[in-house]
Image (tube, rainbow, N blue to C red):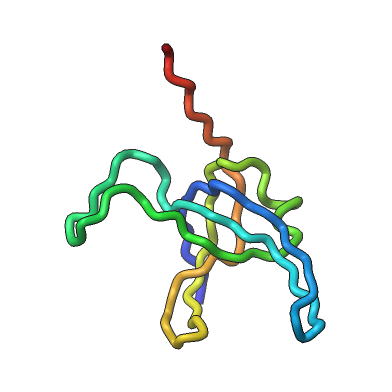
Amino acid sequence: MSAMKQRGIILSASQFNFENKDKEKVKGCSVRAIIADNLAPYKDPEKPNKGRKPAKFTLPFDFYDTKIVDAPGMYEFDMELAIDSDGNMKLVPIDLKFIKPLVVAKPKE
């Protein structure tokens, strides 16, 4: 199956590298992102929701230094279907490409 391309805004990213209670090394890059190509006001027509809820996902450890250039920033994600620990299908990012930084102008006083 080929990856699906989707634009999104990475809001934050942080690396983690630790040993769990079973003495196994755990490392990766924790990311919060909005899977949309803009921050225009949004209201879900089916549910009483306003705005966009950030997604949380984990990427490989080295993506922090090699792929995540700026945060917040616009990225193109390669997404793939996966099955989570509860047996539910979900889209997960497998790769990303930096497009541009996201700069919001400071309001004039």
